[in-house]
Image 1 (spheres, one colour):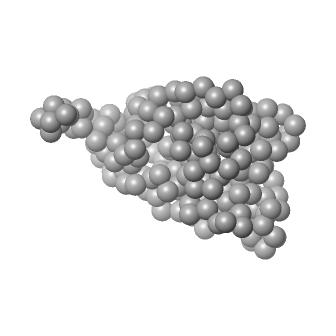
Image 2 (cartoon, rainbow, N blue to C red):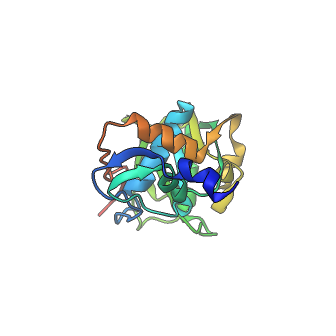
Image 3 (cartoon, rainbow, N blue to C red):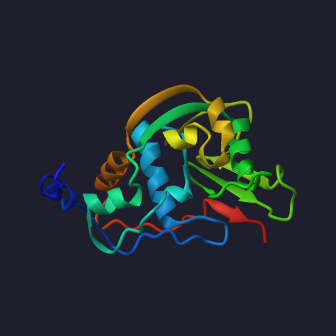
Amino acid sequence: MSEEAVGPMTDRVVTIASANITRQQTGAGESALGDLVADGQRASMNADIAFITTGSLRADIAEGNVTWGDLYAVQPFSATVLSMTLTGDQVRVALEQQWGTLLPPHNLGVSGLSYTFDDRKPAGGKVTEIRVGGVPLDPNAEYTAAMVDFLATGGDGYTVFTKGTNVVNGPFDVDALVAYMKSLPEPVDVKPEGRNTMVA
């Protein structure tokens, strides 16, 4: 498509941000932008939880008018958001894989769950608590998890996602983010919520 053809779409204002929404991570590895993107993917699939790889976040969202082009720049991949069924134990394994022997290049962003980890513990046993919707994770329960196809196929070393079942394809990543941003009250205000907590 020519620049003239995509210009009106790129420049279309989707919403207004009250402050910059950035990839800047807390000491525990959480960012406002990661929370926002994961929330959008979870909402698009009506899933219990969502995972993103923080390496997929390629641009921050600046304060003020937020255009379609701004949101496309965040994840310029045209990846497909999907949902799958994971057991609680597989959710735990996914979080533990952040410290795997073959260290993933990027940590995970999450939605619908919160977890606490102790960096002093050995790999495979760092996560000390996981809650889904405020309730302790049940290792034997099944949860629907949203993510993009890259993660679902084991991208960035998160191989446990290849064991998910009942895969359902959804929208493109940018469409999920645009729809979610439109659904939020203006001006949009996003800050890290403490979804990841490191034991002091």
